[in-house]
Image (tube, rainbow, N blue to C red):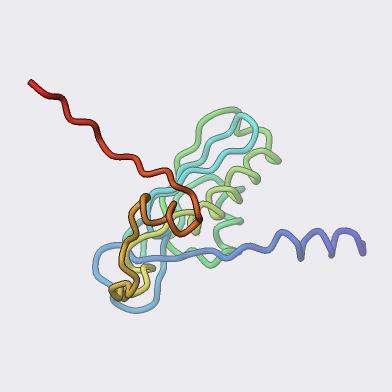
Length: 141
């Protein structure tokens, strides 16, 4: 039991939730379409309007309920009779919600001009006590 508790604590992941349509109220669905893989099973989670509920098989529905997703469409492919792989695919799809960076997660960047002036290769070599000045050769006509 102690090993299972440690394993469960190591596999806790954040689940990102989003909106379908307008941003009114609390987030209730997945932010975008995400796909999870487990064995031969592929599960695709699609955002759904508020009040739809979780449309899908009982196994991924339980995982999504535990994750706090209220409304979601699901589509699955592969041998979904294997419940272990179906669970892994649903878990992987929830992990994928934080695997990409959307514009609402961008931070404001301030770019200040650099105070150092660019140094040429010739000046760099002279400072290093090397006398390697490369000048382009001109062709005479």
